[in-house]
Image (cartoon, rainbow, N blue to C red; front, side, top):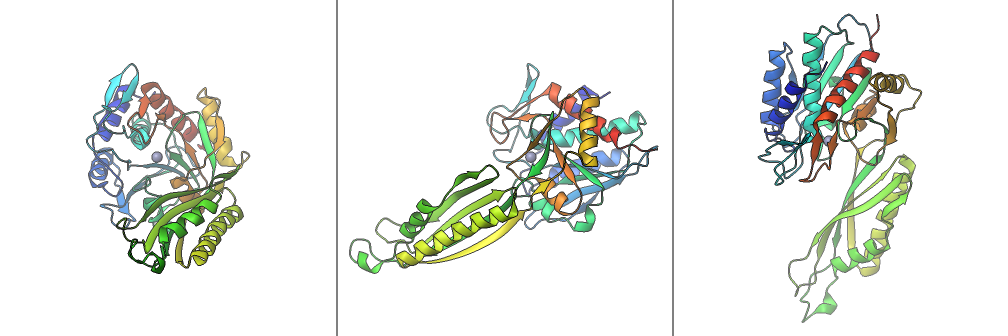
Length: 370
Ligand SMILES: [Zn+2]
């Protein structure tokens, strides 16, 4: 039923429009026009700070169906290097020319939603009411979804199209906390008055060396991802900035982990005579959708009807689904076939793109109610 040629063409068209996070103006204008051509008036909402545009949202009334309202979401932004993408189709795969990412994460999701909107209209397929939402700035920490006014997300269940294998349903994701720590020491000439200095880099390193990082347990991870400081080899550095994160499927565990990281920093800084100031931010909340929930039942049934045996999985990453779940809309993540994402080797199998669209359509049908 899916029009493969049209879907592939749409996908290629989408990836050639640059849309780095917060720079989604051009792609959103394109989408708004495409949607207008289909008769849908989409509106912008929730522009994040520093962003060109907000997310694009509209409602599609149910057709011959009184099913619950279903949110269909895909983020439109891509990671770097993502400017001037040239899609190349060869041997059943679409790749970039090797100098950029492909942007199948997540233009594949966007293309699938457009194709579904076209097909349900053309074939007059019965479907439940849909809320279509294209989000911005997902890749930089769900900033676009987080900027949405809560009242803008109005659905009973959500399908977030994003990422990898098309037979995978992600129903669990962790909590994440980020922190920025500034360690202040005292500057002094490293050769003439080293006794007068307090080395901020040394204090910070001592703390990091004592931290438990990486995989803490099955559902908890921690990382120090950035460290910046110092100006010259002959100056004892008086300031260093550290950025890190912790994630866990359990809130108590992530809080404990973050607490330990903070305590280690404070203790070591004190021991070195330095001062540490830390700012925390809760980036997103975890979610866990039971296999017996109506949403999971329908997703599994839809995949089976499409000839797929679903793999039910959790993820260690966050996505816009975390935000929708926190807003009270139970939402799952469905893969769209993107492979080697966030690298210049990213690729998309044409077969997966088409199958992915069929699967999503099949899941939507499961929500139909007379
Ligand atoms: Zn993505």
